[in-house]
Image (cartoon, rainbow, N blue to C red; front, side, top):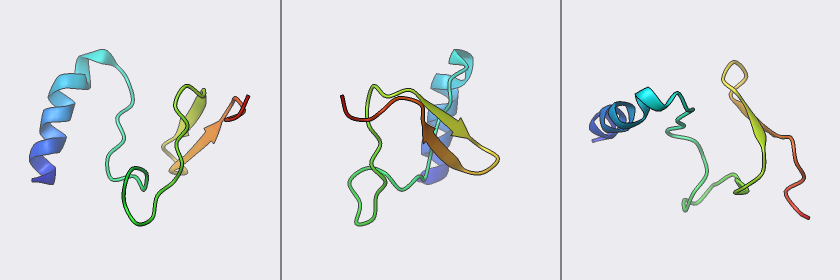
Length: 58
């Protein structure tokens, strides 16, 4: 199932030239990473890290 989801997402987003994150620990699981919406961030694929540029609170 995960492979089918990956293929579907890649097919839809490939031409958009945007980052796609799969399998990351955020969402509605037991362990998750808070991911503020609307905050500019850097997605570092070498270090597998996300760094906020903006403050997540105003």
